[in-house]
Length: 374
Length: 127
Picture 1: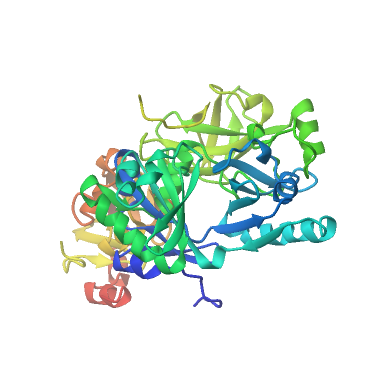
Picture 2 (picture 1 turned 90 degrees about the vertical axis):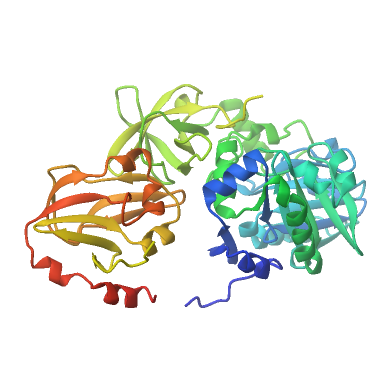
């Protein structure tokens, strides 16, 4: 038996009613699948899938100094955001090591919303509070962790816009990365045109007590269009195909955004932020290892995290490690992400993955690993 | 589909055995395929290899994990289900039929007595 009770989202009963298989994830009891990972994955690529992401964290920052405060903690440039726009960004230590990757939204001039990983919620909040207390006590800024009273879900797929129109008509007007505050009955909800699957879609945030009603409404609207509930299993195969990093795999406190090939989310041209010196040096001098995406090029079992990567140049030497791997439902072959010596971090280069003591050929590819034609 | 066919014997590690003289056909139970969820890759033993009862002899991979299959009886592998190479899902769809894994010429027929009866296996999986 588990010693500590796992946390449950407001949609827990909903998942059980749908016969979801529940698993432990980051201290939460979450659905890993409903009808099957491949089926849910294909639904997202061809129609739509609905994910419970209530375990993620929501931090709100209010005040004239919110922008200044956050912009020296995060790597990307918040000052570039228009009102109601968001950006992918990272929270780093002084040595450039990643504390978390997240989305930051400018709700208004003085109001910012951060969406953080469930597994990093406490660490992120402690870090941000410590920064506030040690250096910025006099700032005009109020910050609150709203995670406990907010639920969230992600509606993803080509049919997502058609489905959401039935509950949030204004959401269809959102451009990618935009966010809007909308009404859901008596409650206020946020809808952003963002996602973690590589498809068009929306992420919706509502107060806990309205989560089940919103979920049901979306399921009813989407039923005829092929909408399926989708779990963490499909979430992982989808994001791996899209080439997106997952904290704890491609990102850890021992990796920097430059090593993770996320330099595009690091704004060295903005005023100082924590980690800037190290990241600037790495961008200038290069790094010894880089994160790459790869595809198995022959028949093989799927690559898995911690499998060793070898060069295919005749030396057969160890050059890195897999950090995420799976069988791609869309491609029918093994795919993954991993770290290799920088000279091997080039699209097209052949590598080998060791799977149960035998080596199988693979190729470094650009991201996304899978993209629909057209 | 019967969940636990009565003409088979079972290992506590969820393999089933169909005994035909000194030959045994081996697969995994319906309970096992449900637990594993949809399989995407299966690694079978080589024809001619010698298996020892209780040793890992094959690997099944679902989207999320790899799992070992254990030899329920000892002997030489005389046939394998090639179809599983291109259609691993056969195991999920028909675990006692098209989803068979391999055939063994048993080296010790007494080992069959150590296997679980359908009732004992049912008790184990609480059906």
